[in-house]
Length: 459
Image 1 (tube, rainbow, N blue to C red):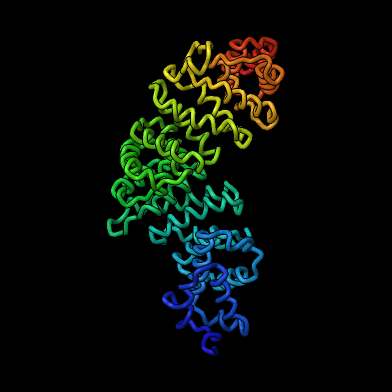
Image 2 (cartoon, rainbow, N blue to C red):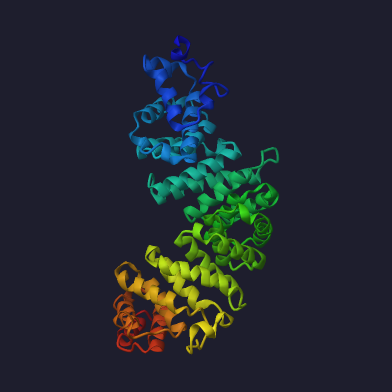
């Protein structure tokens, strides 16, 4: 017992010892605090800083694997003590260790001041980092911005510095070790998160990814194409290669991976018939596992990719029916996406047996009456939350579908047109023109004059 209480670096703190075999966050922190109960300053001073960093990383890994284990780590005195111990030894840390610390503090909610101090040191040493640590640092910046630990502006500045270092790696000596799938995806994801489009770096990431695609798992490929799509960087060979990988591994994709992959291909308008056919089968068989947000994104992607090809009405029916019952859970922009999707699929989607005697004069669309009425009802109740741009999009969609039911919600089209006209000053010229056209098509004539005057004012 005495030997365990002394806790020397040669015993439980070594990577191969008892410490590294801890199965939970609580067990890791218990071992840390046990060693400090008698003489914290002495023990901290004796332990190598690399062991403290390893402890920090292990807690973060355990926490990410099972977040419920550590409800409020920033209030846990054991975690605070561990962070403080590492902070006291900052000057001893090598660049690689700094990157590990920043990653750990991003993975586990940590006070902003502590995170920012370590981040400043790590980013300043980015040019000296091992290539694989650049991905870790980039991810930490993006994730910290997601969590609100740093501002999006600060995150963008840090990611740019990391991206510059990564560019040097790709352009430099061939003796530099290649980045693996996780590192490549982390850098791409961070660039996408802060909307920093470094074209040459993205092309280098594409080449690096294509040479390793067989080693990419479902999460890697989903995150990679999502990142490229968010940056509107369509690298056709990469998307073609990823499609082949996805088709053979669809069963390993989770709901978010499927939705993100479909969204990515639709966003860059990359035809992927084999992929979409596979996603269709997988979604229909596992619809209960999808959140309504995943359903809405997949619904939009189907409309964008299939266009007027007239494929898979069954998938739209399955998605539409499930979205209808959970419409209030959608974010405002997703309401607009569902409306746009209904309006934008081609005429072959039309099923007279289900849609009655109404026929769309334009694209045909997916005129599912129950879905559209649920959309109207939700938009009506959340009108104040919806931006003018989304209102314009919904109004255009209804007009494209020639969908107008005066009795619904007290004349929904009129109410929507009134709201769009009242807030038309916040619309761009193109959106004003679309909205004016939609009002005229739906014969909601009263707001047209007001909106048209705003259109003229915009030149």
